[in-house]
Each structure stands twice: as structure tokens, then as C-alpha cells.
Amino acid sequence: MVISASDVRRSYGETVALDGVSLDIDAGEIYGLIGPNGAGKTTLVRALTGTTDPEGEVRLLGEDPKRADPQRLGLLPQEFSPPARLTAREVVSYYGGLYDESRDVGETLVDVGLTDSGNTYYEDLSGGQKRRVCVATTLVNDPDVLFLDEPTTGIDPQGRRDVWGLIDALADAGATVLVTTHYMEEAERLCDRVGLLAGGRLVAEGPPAALVAEHGGRPRVEIRADDSDHAREVLAAADYAFVPDERRLVVDDVAPDEVGDVATTLTDAGVAYDGLLWRQPDLEEVYLQLTGQTVGASGTPREVGDE
Ligand code: ADP
Image (cartoon, rainbow, N blue to C red):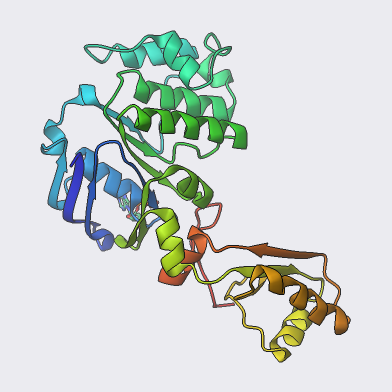
């Protein structure tokens, strides 16, 4: 086991950040920690990497994390600001200099898609390019284990996909990757296994598809109508059920060949709509089902049900 934690707890005063987390991550796995802001992701990463002292037991590469070989580790903290007055190349080279052995700086920049910006000052790069430089600093020692805390936050969609490709390639080459995210699509696309963290506890763990199959519920149809209260009444009268969602009208349990019936029910009652979106449940639904909270694109937790 490359990373393991057993009954890990950490409180800050009255705030319980981690409330007994156990997990095991194998070599070559991409493991995603998912949860909204405040769920405990960063505290768990800090516990696993030895930058905070938790209760319970943590092993990293078979050692106390404080004694694990830094040469074999890469860590991208959530907040990370390299010196602004260095170029991208100088930043990566500076971090490479902290290790006994490091990779070629030019190659590392190519890996993160920064072929043309090597000589640009860090402060002049776009948000996405800055984050890529930060990712590059964690790769420059060719680590066996990578901890990436929200690696793609602030990166544009194309850049995000580039970073996913990079993480995939690293794992294919044998690296173990722990990534935290509040982007569900990222977790589903990237991770072999995910752990859903809520209030400092792991509420579920497994491959994304298995979690969706077990907890995600049935496919559903999201309706966009000017008068969604009226749409809801009409559908309720026809015995349709709804997924609790404070932002949208979502009809539960609609098979692909039943979407037409939903549309006809609305049209026959004279309800105008501008959109009917059929979709399979995803990890967001799993999280909602298990915690009553949404993770949301912003990462801000939201209770569902209290209007
Ligand atoms: P996440 O990374 O999922 O947003 P965190 O691990 O940062 O969650 O935070 C979990 C909880 O612990 C939050 O309530 C947060 O306010 C609290 N917390 C985290 N770090 C500290 C700290 N250094 N001092 C006080 N409270 C903290």
C-alpha cells in the first residue's frame, strides 16, 4: 500500500476537520477525494503528507509521512504562489534545484503544455498557465506519489483536460496520485476510485461508476420552463416524482423512451418549456443522496430541501 490511513482525526479547537478517516491507496491508482469546501480534503492531504499531526495512523510509502523520502513525493497545495518575478522556466528550475536529482526543465514545461511561455514572468501568465507552472514544480523530481490539491481550479476547460491527460500518463507510468476536487466530471473522468468526504468523514468509497450504479438512482429529466411551478403541478397530477433540487425542476425515474411522455404531458396541459434534458445520474447525485448536500461547481456546499 502506498498511502494508508487508519482512523485519522484532527480538530481545530471546536471544529472537527477529520472525524475518523481510514483509506488505502495502491501503487498506480488515481484516487479522488471529493467534497465541498470545508469537508476536510485539505486537512486529510496535510495529514497524509505529514504537515499536520493527526490522531490515528498514517503510512506513506511504508513510513511515517514525516520520514518519507521527499525525492519520491510531489505535493501541490491548494494555495501556492511561486515568486512572481521569476519566469516559468526559472520557477520550475528553482524547485528542481531543491532535489538531488531532477528532470529536464524544458521537458517538464512541455509536459504541462507550456511550450511557448517558458520565458514569461510568472506574474504575467494567465490563471490557467500559472496553475500549470505549479503542477510542473511537483513533477520536476519525477515523483512516485503525487498529492494534487485542487489542481485544476481556475484553469480553463481545455487546460483542465490537458492536466487530466498528464495525470493519466503519470499513473500509467506507475505513479500513485491522490487528487482532491469539487469538479464531479473531473473525478468521474480521471479517478480509478473516489472517496466522498463530508463533515470530516468518508461517506462512500469506490470506482465512480460503481458508486453511481449503487447510489445514483434512476435516470431523470431536467425541465426548464418559465412557469416551473405550473409544470411541477401538471406533472405531479400525472404521478411523476421529483428529485429534490432547489435550483431546477427534475423529474425522477424517466427511462429514455419515456421522455416523450413527459413532453406530451406538459404540452397537453399548455405548459411551455424551453428545455428538456435527459440525463443519467452522476457523482453529484450520489453525493446528494448520501449527504443531503450538493458539491456544486463552486465547491460551496448547499443544503437541499430548505428553501
Ligand atoms: P476542504 O479542503 O475540504 O475545503 P479543510 O480541510 O480546509 O476542507 O477544512 C475542514 C474544516 O477544518 C473547515 O471547517 C475548516 O474551517 C477547518 N480548518 C482547516 N484548517 C484549519 C486551521 N488551520 N485552523 C482552523 N480551522 C481549520
